[in-house]
Image: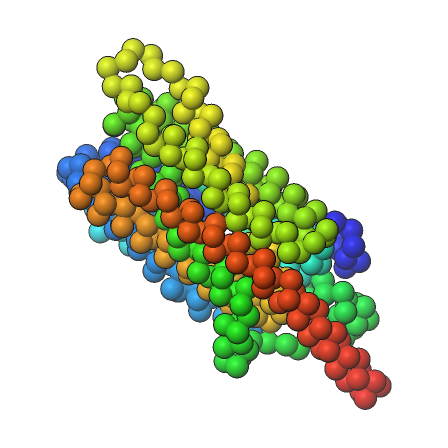
Length: 450
């Protein structure tokens, strides 16, 4: 990724620190999942309360409240210093995660997880807004792949720590282990990173900004409203809700489902979910690199790729959910569930970095934080209401039927992504023309001042 002359060692160092902080923030995400039953026993909950309160209510407040607050964070991302906002949001996310390890009541855990959700949600618009000013449109899918890879690695690391340490040492310790190291990286970022100029990665603005001109574009209410006139934005926002609901099955319920209903141990069930998590790492990285090549060949093919990949992921997930129960089987084989989990995670995550790149490539630098926070809101609605909705399906139909119903939401998500075949190229061309117009205005301003 060398087509941006403003990118050097200092910028690489900054991106690495941004990625490291994201890794630890996202490691907080699924620390409860491997130990839902243990937490339920600790608080005196039965099976229904476990699924409704721990699986449903906490997931709801974690994602939805966090996303609503991050709408404001996204707006401020386009107005104020992103460096300062990034550090503040990181602390808001990590401190309550650390304190979750000391929660003594369900109420304490509930609100601490809500605050952690604000931190995770706020990371997304700030991180990708900054990434948009490190890489040009030709390399944003690949750059988003790296960041998505790190975020997925964080989720996997957190799940692994909780799954293997929780059963032996208790469910609280993983929260402390995961949160503590992040504060070192936050301090390094604060004292050693210089903020990247807004707009410097745009081809028409790069030379002007490098010569000393300042991109003065900032979000306002009129620009915020204009976000909703971009058809690609609307589709990206709409597909987020159905696309995230099945992940509630995978990362909230599947671990407990395989250990309590399928006859596997907690450790083996954790390995199955971890294999899906590992697949999301491989798939997000591969998806971004493939998407980058597809975009540079023909932008129209990129949403075709993402939509078909999302729909294809329904098949291995269905096989994973309906795998025969191994209750009563001595030493049940884990090979097939591992392969199915890998196939599911790999296929369905392929669109993720490309949707971020699509969003960056149709929105101007001063609106990217806002649209990314809106995208995070719709994703979080799916992730938050998803487990709550699934928990209601569980009460009505049982776990297996509820999980199969949730799986079908990926079909709706993929079909919506396919609609961007008709909107994405036009919206990208519109942004290119807008940036050229802004460059002419900046050049004229520089001449007048000279």
